Image (tube, rainbow, N blue to C red; front, side, top):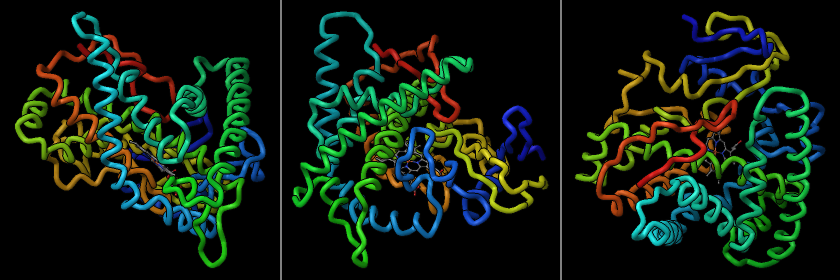
Length: 371
Ligand code: HEM
């Protein structure tokens, strides 16, 4: 009842129920990810990234990318992620030493960690981190209000940013071409299946997607996890007692405060979902955050239970577009939370004046003061 509703304002369908959401996401023949018009991206004429492609091209590209983005490659990065985390926490400590000032968890750790990690994995120099921040912010920033001039301004800035980013990655690809230097970019350049490799345009689109899809989402996972722990001191105490519970804490954060709340598809043929008739061309918005609180699947869905088992949340999507970066995001969040736990002795209160990020699909806060 009420798990699929028509939204007349945006002329689309909202899919809230867990099973209905899974039905849409796994049925890629009826629900297309090709959300662009005539192959044109809203930012200009760029090669679509795998996120916006359907089979058979999606299958081919994902197989190629999988050659470079392997669980082994990600796991081998663990020591670096630990070092980067500890360096950031040390810098944070130095900043506050002897002062009773607050620090912002977002600015000090949760934002820089995934940016540095992805920059290093790709093989871009650390001194370009600030540029990355600006580009990555622009790619996911929502308009501050819905006036046409505000939206136009954002689109113009975003298109300019995308152009710069493209130029930037063109140089990086140039630098790594023909070198087997252990970077993700060189592995992507040389990935080959049946004599086919990624074109330069596809490579650039993938690099941009990594920045857009991987950074802010992971930042929000880290902050949302810390927020869950502060809001549930009993979970905080349990984790301190038994750090092995960290996997459960991260999984439950993904379900309870899902960093990506929604994704969408375009209906390719008339079809019924949850008793509603969708027509060809309709947009279906799949609310992952709502599906993750469906009481038909999760007992006490509004309660944070880090020991919940099983916990088949849909925070990383479902089906052929299941998040490629899920193991990396979870690894970074685990390392960050455990490192904070080892350095922060007392549970502090949850800050009261948290400001949400303005976005239709990202769930997180702009800053999170900690003592
Ligand atoms: C796809 C969520 C982190 C790379 C997705 C999708 C979701 C998602 C929901 C599927 C979208 C759809 O079906 O339309 C998240 C969350 C993250 C996270 C919640 C962090 C907590 C990352 C990271 C990376 C990454 C760290 C890479 C560095 C991707 C890519 C896809 C994707 C490449 C497209 C896969 C495809 O289309 O086949 N992510 N993501 N994500 N994600 Fe993530």
